[in-house]
Length: 366
Image 1: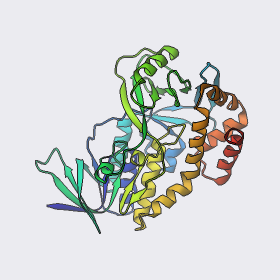
Image 2: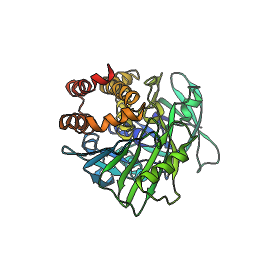
Image 3: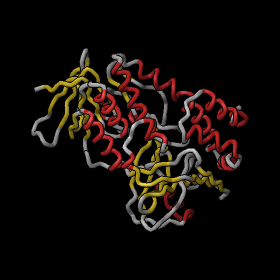
Image 4: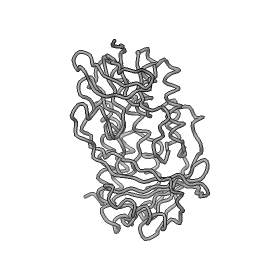
């Protein structure tokens, strides 16, 4: 037996749940498939507060508001930035993802706990094979479109023989008994080569983590950061891959890739939740227009230039500790703080905001 839907969404995180909700609200029948409704992705959980109104996200999922950012250089120089035009909303990913799926279901999307295994046919329609814990045999779903929202380890990419995403590796841990009032970003190649370590406030304690390119040495980096920041591990750290943005895939015919499955994590800042939700929204809009190719146009119009700029800044400033020192220095200037917050926090999409930010760093990029 083959089940039928207009859109099959594989993956129930922020990207997939947003796509399902937008489609359902427009009256398009969709099935959202998530392999584990109780899965919790390791994540600092920071989202610009402005995104909740922009994307109509339920604010009951916010655990804490943070109105300050701290950036610490490799040598210990520090800049504190007060957020005056918004805040960073901290969410717990398990609760947040469930809230988004609930909103999608309320809007009319159908939810199914199942695992995608393969495509049986890709033609005028797409037939996907799934295994479901409640059903003894696998099931097949036929859809006009498929949204691949199944993360950095995307099984859809594997099924289509698309090369795996380039990525870097993180270790993170939720720690009770620790406290901070700001989202802290710690720079230094000894504990975060070509990346950063972080400490984010949580409802009860903090979330701390560090990153490195490849698993080799990540434990050493983790221990060095704990020592530098003065944190005590409780042994519950978790590892996870974060994709590197390449901007090389949006859709293959009627199969659209969103969020981490498309590598849509902002270079340098490594912000992913907001851009995952926006990609889900844009993919849904393209499907609603009956033109899957419109998705790339919508995404690139809004984000391609800023992702490209941030990739260049990342390559320059985190190439060496001597350059990372400059990040703190330039962000001590009020006009640079304002330009950064306009771009990062308010998500100002106007051409002028990106141009002013580009001009600030032009002397570094040549």
